[in-house]
Structures are given as C-alpha cells and as structure tokens.
Amino acid sequence: MATGADVRDILELGGVESENTGTINKKDIINSDKKKSKKSSETLTFKRPEGMHREVYALLYSDKKDAPPLLPSDTTQGYRTVKAKLGSKKVRPWKWMPFTNPARKDGAMFYHWRRAAEEGKDYPFARFNKTVQVPVYSEQEYQMYLHDDAWTKAETDHLFDLARRFDLRFVVIHDRYDHQQFKKRSVEDLKERYYHICAKLANIRAAPGTDLKIPVFDAGHERRRKEQLERLYNRTPEQVAEEEYLIQELRKIETRKKEREKRTQDLQKLITAADTTTEQRRAERKAPKKKLPQKKETEKPAVPETAGIKFPDFKSAGVTLRSQRVGSCPVPMGPLLMSFTLPGSLLILL
Image 1 (spheres, one colour):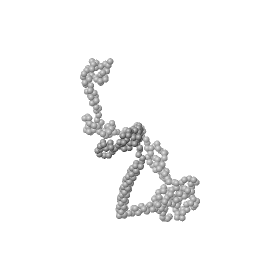
Image 2 (cartoon, rainbow, N blue to C red):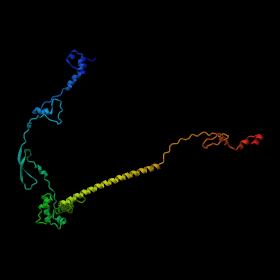
Image 3 (cartoon, helix red, strand yellow):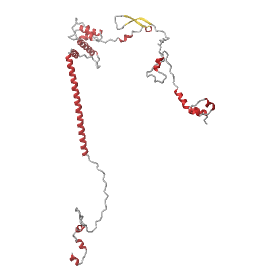
Image 4 (cartoon, one colour):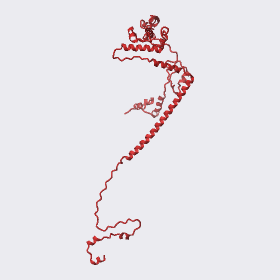
C-alpha cells in the first residue's frame, strides 16, 4: 500500500500541515498547479556589469521581460580599461650585431637588432637570393657553333655579361648596353641572340636520346606585336569612335543571326514533328488489325425434310389475301398420282 508521503512525492505536494498529519487535504490537490506555476515563473536576475552605467544597462536589458539583444556581448571583462597582463617569464634580450648580405660580393658589413639567442645564425633573407643560371661557352665552342657574321665575339660576351648582372631583365640590359662601342641593337635583337646561343649549347651538351625543352624566341612575331600595339596606342579619337560603332554593329548582326538560327530551328522542329505524325498514321493504317477471337457457332442438328407439299413464301410488299397464298400451290402432282390408284370416275374428272 502507498502511504501519504508517497502520494505527496508523486503529486509534488508539500506543506507543514500535510506533513504533520500525514494525510492529503483538498487544498493540497487544488493548489498544486499554483505551486508549479510559481516555480516556473521564477527567472534569473542578471547583474549589471561592473563599470556600466545604469541607463546603458537599462537600454540593453530590463526586468520587464524584454527580449535580449541580438548581438552577443561579452561582459566578463567589464567595461573598464583592462590592464596589461605581463607574464612572469624573463624578457628575451636583444643585441645590436653585425651581418653580411650574401648577395653582395663587396663584403659590405651592416648592423641590426636581433635576439641574443640568434647570434651567429645566417641572415634570414638570404634564402631569397636566387640567381639565373646563364650558360658559359668556351672559345672553341664559339668558333665551331656560335659564330655569326652579324655579331662579334666581344659583343656577344658583353651581352652575356649584362645578362648575368641584371638576371635576364632585357629592358635593363638594353638600357645598359654599350651602343657607342657596339652596333645599336633593339630588345628583340638582344633576346634573339641570347636564346639562339642557349639553344645551340643545349643541343651540343645534351646526351643522345634525351628530350630537351629548348627555349625558342620568335623575334619577328615580337616585332609585329609591338608594332600593332603602337598603332593601337596612336589612334585618333575619330578612329576610336568609328571602331566602337563598328563593334556595336557587329554585335547587332550577331544577335540577328542568333535569332534567325533560333527561328529556323523552331521551324525545323515543327516540320519534323509533322512528318513523324504522318508517318505514324501511315504505319497505323498499314499495320494488320488484331483479329478478335470469334466464337464457334454451335452446329444445329439437321432437321430431316418432311415429305409434303411446300408452299412458296409470299414476299411481296403490301396487304395480301389468304386466297392468294392458297392459289400459289404447286401444280405438278405426278408423283402423288402414280402412288395412288384412283377409280375411273375420278380420273375422268381430273
């Protein structure tokens, strides 16, 4: 049997009177819903952050069950100026120390601040010191494979020396080229001579049967490209306006062409659809129709013909008399007369 305490625990009832008596009262059962609502109505109270004014906090949240702000706010740190949290570790010392740049060949010495623990290490930016590998040729190779009537050996050596110094920046090479001592050359001429020698040396020094990626420079194409760019840059405003007008007309022509093609495609679809429907109809007409299973007629028993006089059916339209039907009796009576013997008086009458 369940005791009163068990029932109170199930119904979540409490009170001094019910606990003392050990019985359940009517008030406990009626007021049980009120007690639950009181518990659910209790809400948490938010504390105003330290350093925030009361008016500002009232704008953010109030006790009138207003909705909280949509933007999340972190009030754990408060609204005061946070002091710097200095660690308990020792400060790492810095030192004014010299360094050399490996990209420079003159042995220049520089100074900068570095941590004392990094003393003696390489310069960190030395890894960016990348140089272009410019091929080197001998006197014998030049005389056998690289000789050119338009170029002297001294001019070729001067070109390769500038290529090593300026890392194949041919615009800079052209600017630093000695045009007084040597013949005046363009940037395309310098590129053509350099890449021609590189391709020759790669073919000579390559092992037989190896696939080489030889750099090729088309000087004629480069000259034509620059000439076209110069013409494009030197256009007059009238020429630019005319070109824009022609481009607009070309776009209109293209749109008309697309519309025409679309119309022809739609018309072709209609024609093909009509052809397919007519072909289907012809095929349906030519196709043999399915024969329905016919029921076999039950054979009627043959009725033996009775020996007697047959009267022909009178099939004329309109009103007929019975005498007309009687008058149409068959005339030949030969077989009947032969089967009977009649007296002489009757034969005379017939």
